[in-house]
Length: 220
Image (cartoon, rainbow, N blue to C red; front, side, top):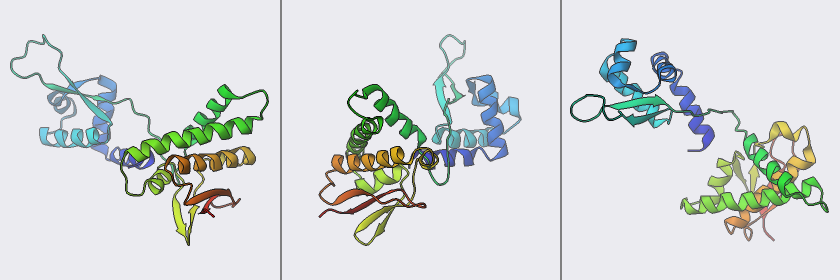
């Protein structure tokens, strides 16, 4: 599951009123035992346990052991606390934090002899290779397809080519088309290099108002 899908799922969980109330209680009161939640909210133990499990699975809640020396006998009770997780979901997916990382790297490594776009291209290629190495380690059967999807490109087959039907940096493309499209192409090249897929595809700029400006064409 990619970050956007996970955030959408988490937001969906919080749309349930009782679950949202429980989560807000943990945010306001810090680590609490299941019994404390039941008493404070007037909810049954089975229902509280169900909601806590769902929130924990979505990484919205974490568990901590009760501190030693509380005077309780037997096994220490688990306490639940709200995770400090930032949710950011959009449809179609946007990855502005990825663009920010590339541009920050470019700012740090910018050489006097090159333009900022050239520095950003170098940074994007390198990041693409790094992300590809992480994806390859996951053992996914089609690592390239999985990675492009995770980055928000929403790849789709078109004959022998791969169309990237979504630009994860869409809003910024309107601000500086040359820079953002160059970064997109460089990031795609880095992904291809890192997954040893450059022999299969070539990333080319094909400006399109609806899709990403990059098209993966069969390598010659």
